[in-house]
Each structure stands twice: as structure tokens, then as C-alpha cells.
Image 1: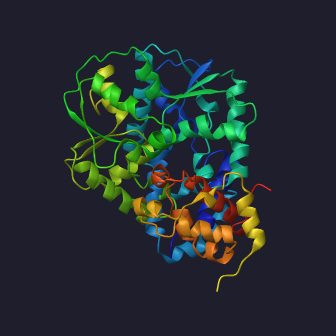
Image 2 (image 1 turned 60 degrees about the vertical axis):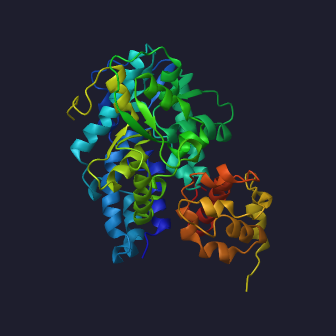
Image 3 (image 1 turned 180 degrees about the vertical axis):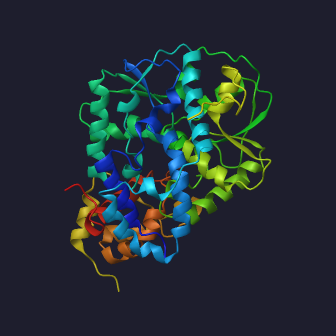
Length: 330
Length: 103
């Protein structure tokens, strides 16, 4: 038996209404990446994480459980689970997050913020006040719940006097730039991805990236938001050679991630297909969406294939961070 | 036999983003779909426009399997907003079948 869509989606919707996120994270989990970076609180321009990178360790832990539940007798009891989840956040009991994975995804956010600092961009952060964007609930078509949540997010920015938002992942960029204006009257935020902000800046590489990089374009960046050239421009400027896989740029192939919540098996099959396409173009793969990154990483069986977030390559080139060595302990 | 539910057809087609009637039935969308979903979107949209509610509801798994990746839209000669149409149908199922709604 496949996972029961109504109850799985019901739990996510209930969480967004009750806990303002699909899988509730503590304030510590949301903000820990920013420790020691001296980012001011608030301001007219802010970095907005939308919690996507911070959610990945919880998504990994939950997906592992869901993959076991898929096709098992336990799916019959998801309705009971949804009932109890209204009172107790079941996600906290379902699965433990991996501290090493948490450290890695926090580091990606640190690298992104440090790249913006290196480019002399003045920005603040809303810290514990920041909310999830509601992207998953929008994609699944629960529009009235999404609209109500989007209004809360917009109010959060207005309350803090924010005029301009720098996003860090494709889904949040799409929500804030192209979807929110359809749901919120008088919506007036300027929204740019950090890749666009860096590409427009005068940032210069401190180290040469002497390697071939295969870009995995995100469907949402490429086809929804027309962000195709910026990642290539930034990598080339640092000296990297770009190898394009079969299906690239606006014709990129999905990683399978968007259906992970309901169909973990199908999502994995799509990711394996994509890994095969990417692997024929080279071993150093750059993803620019945390959902793509985690889904592709879990599907990659060949140890020679290294899949990294693009921010890791950029941090090495533009701020001189040795790859995978800098860390913060949570 | 296909039963037609005119109320269902009206609800779906009055959604302002639902532009499936522009579909030329050329099949490019199905050919390029990374999921290999054959019935999406052509057949599904025709069922929806016709009011074949039961047929649409029989295919819930297919409807929620769509990646919303827009590979189909990128290749659609009629510029149909396929992903948005899929979202519209999901919205109907959420409200009318799953009872997932604020109100």
C-alpha cells in the first residue's frame, strides 16, 4: 500500500497551521548557522533562509522512516497519527537528525552569508522571527492554508521594515518572487537569489577553482525563475570549467525530490536516473537547491561522484574556505 | 462508462488558472515527462473538462506524483500552464475529498 496522501498531507497542513512550519524546527535549529557571523538583526535588506537548508536533516530522518512505511501495514494507521499530531508534534519522536548532516547544511548557509559579506552586500537577518515560506503546501494545492501563511510571512517582513529580500534556495525564491504577489494584495518586496546578487556584484576570486564542474540546474531556478547564467558565470569567473550534462539549463531533469514525502520509492528512481546523466559528464557535481542536493546524494552509489552545494565551490574560490573542513559544532 | 458531473466540470474550469482547453493533444508533454506519466496531462485534463469526476479521482496517485518540474510546459507548443492545472486539480481533491481546507 502506498503512503496515504490524505493523511501525510494532512499532517503537513496541520503543522503549518498550528506550528507555522511543515516539520517544526526549534529556534536554535533555525538560527544556529548564523552564530558568530555578526549579521545585524533586521534592516531594509535581509537574508531569508525560508528554513529549507535547516529542514534537510529532519527531512532525511523522516524520509528514512517513510520509505520503510511505504507498502507496509502501518500506513493504515496514519489517520491515527494525524489525530495525535494535532496535540503533540510527532516529528520530534519519529526520527533523530544526524548531527553531522546538520553541521554540513548549516555550513552551506554560513558560506552563503559569508559570500554576501565578502561581496560587500549590507544585509540583516530576522533570526528567530523568521518563518518557513509555505512552499510545500502551495505545491500540493492547499491554497487557502498557504494564503493565510504567506500573509503571516509578508507581515513579518513589513513589521521589520524590510524592503528587499535575498533568498538562498530556488523554492523560496519562487514563492517570494512569483507566487506571493498572486496571493497578497499590495505585495512590494524586491526578491533576489544570492546567486543573482553575487553575479551582479564585484566579488573577485581569491583562489582559482582548477576543476571541471557539472551543473545540476534546479527545475525551479531554471524554468520558473530563469536563473541559468548566474551560477555558470560565478563558477567560470573563478576558473572552473563547466561540463553540461544531458538535460541542462532550461531543459534540466528533475531530481525527484518534490515527491519524496508521498512516494519515496519513485523519488529515488528519478534521482538515480539523474545521477546517471550527471555522472557521464564528470564527477564534481554542483547542485543549487537543498532538496536536489539531499535527494541526489542519497541516490548516488558511485563513491567517485562528489555532489556538493554550489555555495561550497563558491566559498572555496571567493572566500578561500577549504572545502568541507570549516565547521561549526552544534 | 464515463459519468459526467457538470458541477465538477464547472468548478475546475472556472478556476482562473485552468487553461487545459488550449491543449492540442500532441503528446509532447507525455513524451518528455521524467516520471513517464502517460495520462498526465492530456487525458486527465480532458476528463476534468468533461466532468468525469470518478475518472479523475481514480487517478489520485498519478495526480500527486507530478513533480511540477515544468519539463512538459517548456516543450508545450500551446503554452498550456500544465503544472498550475495539476495544482488546481490537487486543490479540488484536497477540499472535496480529503477535507483539507481552512474553512
